[in-house]
Image (cartoon, rainbow, N blue to C red; front, side, top):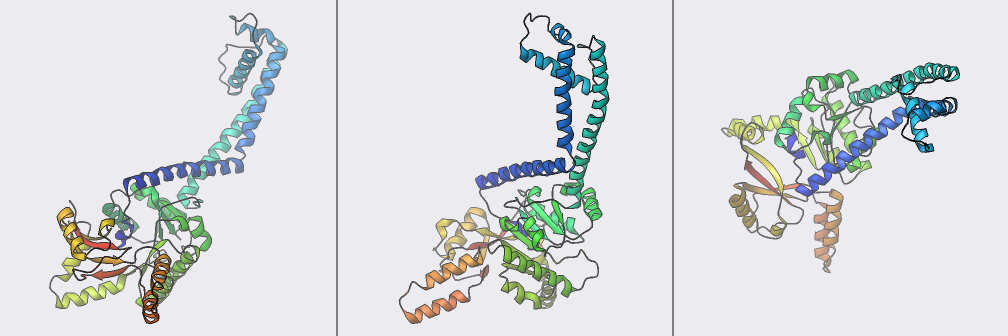
Length: 425
């Protein structure tokens, strides 16, 4: 069930655009982080010291060993200043790097003394530069591993709030059901120890590209750092990061996260997992589109298994990633909006060999659907009809499943088809 929330329909062009943006942003983020760490570790300062030492050493060498500079370019009778500058700069870099090719050497005592001083100074400056550069790169790698990055520029990514003890198994389902899904687009916010993050990446190298941001998933500053207002979808898990936590504590975190997310962004699509159905009203108040009732489903499935033979096998078959049949929601082609349900059902059966069992209505931002319903309700001049329309708009339910409607039912705007389809195993 959790996997289907990531089944986002998109065109090839849109997909490529998102990938290009994500790659460019990833590159920008890498450079931004490195720039910050280079400043913090004083890498730029030591680099400038090396450049300054190059210029100073080259100028002194040109002054003290001008003849040796000219001899390094025997083919030039009247050596231009640019060539002289390149020659002495080359000598300075080779000397400071302690390569010592020997093609340009000092001939005077003053030049040799100056070279000795430059060598001593270069050993110190280059060593400090190398050490701080290595420290900055190591720190960057540790930040990635320990989940303390700034991801405020992410866009069209998928955020998972919370942690599961079987996180890898859940991600396996997500990847299997979405073969075009890019792991770099997944961001997990979890309050787990840095060692646990490193252990997860070591045990499951396939998921090393997934970013894990460490902290409480209901923390506003952390959610903003994860750029949830620009996310494609958010899923709030019933968090298992704290062993022994009660269902009430777990659901309270889910509610806090949902309300915080809605305070930051009213448009992003959110799905949440609940353990206790009594918290449902709080999530509906926050206009959470999809709610997964983990424990409630178990009770209902057990109850139906008593009276309906094989119902558990039917449900397992539709939800398992290992069986050919599966249930999905899919964007309806524009040409079928306003047409009869039977026309769309025939289309899917003939073109895709899929069974259309219903419609998911009022899909998208709840606030946009509400405003559209209110505008539509006010188009009549009949007061009684206006009141009825406003009441319907008030009762509007986001992602409303209309299962098995009448054949002549007109397909409304902002709907998706609920399909039973078949995959190749």
